Structures are given as structure tokens and as C-alpha cells.
Length: 260
Image 1: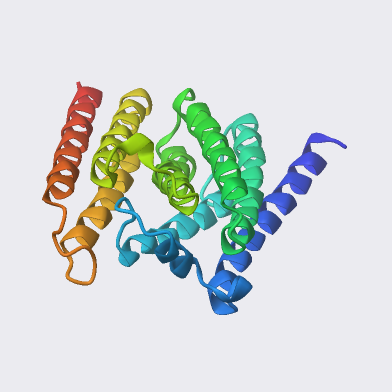
Image 2 (image 1 turned 180 degrees about the vertical axis):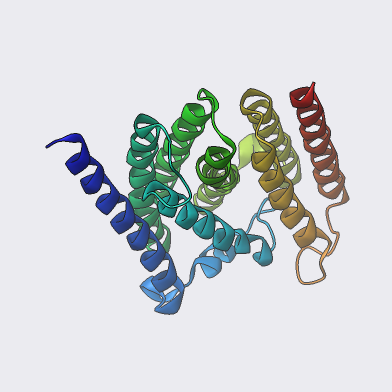
């Protein structure tokens, strides 16, 4: 096949897998798959790292940004852009969409070991995309339609991976080596913040940082809400606030540094 045929074939697969991802995620809660919706499964594996339900509304933003990326890939909003860059991103995007759909089935059928492996696969594909865009000099349109969607997606999957692993540990009744759940939650919170900060510094990802702030705000909201943990764990609440401040400071520093 020539380059144009390859491009058409890849675009068809990219659109098809995106629609597959959207459809499976929608049916997961409409049917729901295996008689339980996605949120109910999260509640079943109760842990102190899980964010409030409203936090998951970010998926709507992610799907919309990815749709804009697809439109950009198809030629709208652009005249000139590196075909090699677009092809590389499209390949990994396609893989991530398939993994996303597979994850839903594993999650809904309580195959948590598999769900963690698939989630890590998603994380690695999105890391690859973000490394590609970071290493490439992008126009302002490319930053909006290529870097932004996957930076936001990557940020959320970073937190989702930690939450998925936490749910797995809860499901197997892991005793935490005798360390309390509160202490482990604080360790996880700071581990997530450190990973996020390192990523922000490496990729200069302001949008990535905003997603982390949103996720940590969701965890904070669940801890202070009467319908959540109702302020039962003040050390966790304080730790969340410290993480939020640290992430915000690094984001501010990075933004100032970029303008110098």
C-alpha cells in the first residue's frame, strides 16, 4: 500500500476503535455490563484513595478532546503537520482505545488482576504519545489538537492506575505489611504527587497538572463530605492539601520558567 492508502487505513482503525471505546463505556452503565455499573464496582472495593463520583465527569472532557484530535487527524483545522507525527500518535491512540474497551470488561467481571495489567498498558501507550509530542517542536494548533488531549488523558490514567492497583489490593484483603490503611493512603497520595510532579517537570505539562489537581480535589471532596468519609481522617485530608499545594507550586514554577 502507498502512503495515502496506509493513512486512510490507519484513520479508519483510529475512528473505529474510538467509537468502540465510547460504545463500550456507555453500555457499561446503560445495560449495565454484568449487572453492575462502573461506579458500583469502585464502591465495592472501598478505599481511602477513591475520589468523589463527580470527579469521573472528566471522562466527558477526555472523550471530547480525543474527538477534536480525530477531526484534526482527518485534516480539519490544519494545513501542514508532520505526517510521521500524526501516524505515530494514531497508532498508539488506536492501541489505547482497544485497551480502554478491554479494561471495562475486566473491571465489570471483577478480573482485577487483568484490569491492572491492561491499565498499565494504557498508561504506557499514553506515556509514549506524550514523550513523542514533548520531543517534537509543535505549532500552536498541534499543541491544542495533539498534545492537549493526550496530556489530559495521560494525567487521568496516571491517577486511575494508582486507584486500580489500590482496588486490587483491597480485593485480595492485603494486610499492608501491618501498616494501617491511613498510613498507606498517605504514602500513595505522596507517591502519586511525586510521579505527577516529575512528569510535569519532564514534559512541562500544565494540563497534565490540572488533571492531577482535579483528581486530588475529588479525593479531598469525598473525605470532607458527609456522604463520604465525613472528615474521619484528618491526616489524610491534610496530606491531600499538601499534595495539592506542591503540585500547584511546581506547575506555577514550570509556567514561569517556560516564559523566561
